[in-house]
Image 1 (cartoon, rainbow, N blue to C red):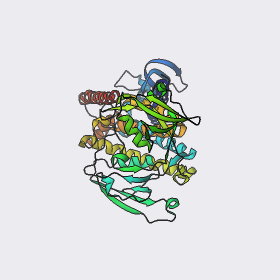
Image 2 (tube, rainbow, N blue to C red):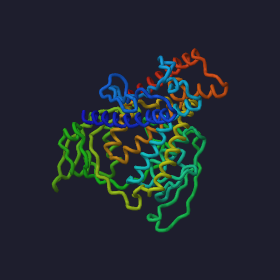
Image 3 (cartoon, one colour):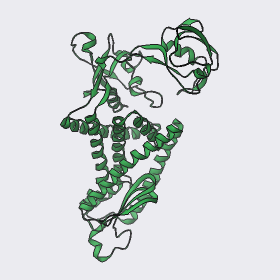
Image 4 (cartoon, rainbow, N blue to C red):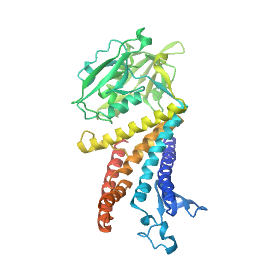
Length: 456
């Protein structure tokens, strides 16, 4: 329940910030173009807070935090007093109307830059993208990893963290090939080694985001430090807790077989759903045997596996792989702008791949997934939350630019037709477009919500 409330609160905060930025873009440019703004609302429905500003605009916070709007004076909507006609939106030039409508998505892109700027100024603890193996019969299987290798670039795009590698790989889903630039870590190899670039055949690359990540599906083995069999976490209400296993116990054997490595232990547990296992542990320098029955659970492939609910102690990451990703005042702005541009490009690519079928509609996410992401990132800290809302802000801006008549992009489409033809699109045509756009948007929202519930 606490996790739900935390995610819900984080979602409301994130969405409120992004909606405010978007609507303020419309508001600011409308005022600069001489349009009278009657209401600036964050949310829909019944107002829970309102204030009349000295500028004549009513500022409102409404009950349903799933959007917002800027109500401008418009003769197409209501009767306008003669003395205010020159302040009506519909009386402005087509280029002024284009500026007002496009200001919302542009404000989202600007906000993303600002959020990332602050994030880079603060600095984020990061890990270098280092691999120690590859899977055979995978696109990355042609890479011979003798010693840990750091990924320096993906198809020429420089990467410094696993998050950047993930983002770069996503942009190549559906492509026939991609290249990885690799080099041994100097501190691991003892000397500076030349880089090598390997081209991977990705024509048969299969990626299902519900089951794996682009990194592991490509066949890259992420380097991880060693695992100590000392129990670091026991999940509440798990089979391990019910059997009396506690944090600090050290696993030495299972069913009489000495413990070798954590993966082998996991394999035994997963193959023993609802079957009692005997775990030999060391507690307070004494050896004890504990009977535990792994609970049955469905994995991503629909298979029944056993789960006991414990995690081992992981050795610390080598200093050579850890670094603080931060920049100075000027470089932070450059990095934030570049990252925002990368997010825009990848987002447009993903939309295109949805239409070509390279990316499944199952990848669409709705408010539940966004709420979960907001809660998770907020729990990690401010810098991670800033990175998350920057990503959502970019996507909000792009979605609003889609040429659906109910979105900003649809209005822009009509205005650019007006620029070309020299006359407004007929009201009847606009009305038909709005109905079609609303139906398509509701369909997409329905698919996204269905995916959210399926993931739950």
